[in-house]
Image (cartoon, rainbow, N blue to C red):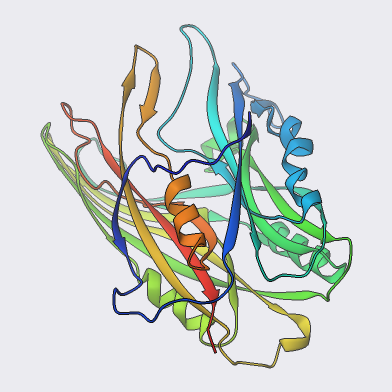
Length: 366
């Protein structure tokens, strides 16, 4: 727990979109700050009744710590787990996960301080099965998630002067009850929404959400490595709203999905459709101004995951160095999302290689 900045990155950057021939950047640099926490999440046994606590976390105990950089004029960008790292013990239902909050401040921005406001919300996916469920053969499932409370909370707080920052799963969940589970209702999962409240107001913001589908094809043969193909126009969906004067805030996998699976004795093929929600903002007084103000880029970052002892999982991931480097060229981090597919490995005898997508944007030079 505490603040740390690293000049080295664990993992490998495999694609950074700014072209080598791009003109030199002379705009303001972006300073980053990183706050590390270790969140404990505990599972409960025999939570069968509706409303019983299934999992709990101590995430909210860190919120006073997370607000400190905002009192120094930093903007929170994201708060999320550092993937590929889990600590647990034998016979324990508690796991410890590293979480990191990332903050930024531009050299040129006016002095201000901010208060952190957290709205607790939740989502509840509902699963629908189609047809019979044989041991081998074709199956089809669909999962729908209700997100109205998330969206209405953003609208309410933005109208009261708040600025939506990020959201993350809180680690808290409650049972939907045995009979509801049998009819497809998943547990209710907690989601925390983060807002910054400026101590000197500079106007309100308006938001738009865009649903973006992500298609995954997966094939597993015997004990070999799974093969996955992910289809999504990440940059196209990013650049489109930017070209209309919007600025991106976040990308959220809302747990909605559909899947068609064909399973054999030693093989499996599946087509999976996931849903993401992309959040964009504009100052309210520029709502009708479609002049592009930001350019965007995406960095792909791969890392390996392995075991540490009998129960713990570790990775070689450290993204601070790359984020700090991007800040020297004026790039503001938007969000970091887990790529929904394997890059390599993951079979019975190999450790998986995973990927992150890091989205950045910066003001256009004039």
